Image (cartoon, rainbow, N blue to C red):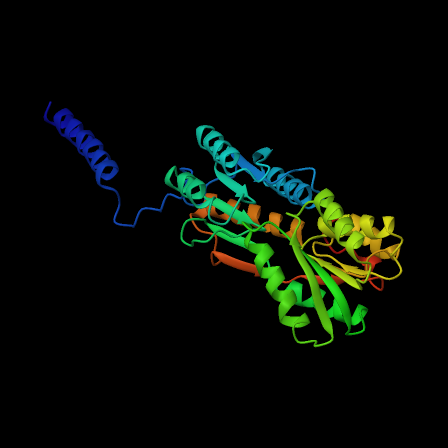
Length: 332
């Protein structure tokens, strides 16, 4: 009888110790739980929401496609949507991602200031946001902001523009959306180079809001006023291609030199056809893949291992090396 009582006491002691261990934890520090609820070294899986501007723009489609493919390769489900540069629609899409308990959001945002609240909302819900292509005007909210080195790329493009014009002449600049920090940074990079060339005169500077049709209309109007234009430098390839069409319609392709920014397949085709002189590749696919890889790392470990602000250098594409590039990436 005494033996059986001792045995029961021993068993009760083990159970009590186990319960105490569960309640109080071990002597080791508990693993930090990253946003999304995964424990340290958690398995991949769950939803990654990918939100970009209009998918009919080949640049944004390329980054969405690259992020989608990389996320699926790493074992995630994906949702892909466009906010069309509408902050309200962007906010609604982030609400949807929150309600679906996404593990992370990959976002090319709808405005440097207008997107701060939306990114903070996702963070407060425990969902890390990885910004690509465009930054926001605040740090400490997004898990990462991975962008092209727009100043470096703009300087590359401007140097080629100066070279194409022989260092003299009159030119027009087409600028992107005022709410997009990239527009200002690229315009500033152009000015840093072209402003040092005294025989180059800027005769007009207009925003075409990254839009091809708007660029066509504005360049057409400029050329109706005067054909005394030697060059057009644009803040992206979409506007540059609008300028190409307007210049071609005016019969001035051989006279007016055009440089863009993005490295789109259509711009590369225009360079090969002699309708544009250069573009600057910003590696959309690479940046999108990096964002997904860092999201995967964050989901598994609670950190990316990288600084929040990350800048990737751009590359100049001209007729000499155009065959080396594909869809917003250098061919392997």
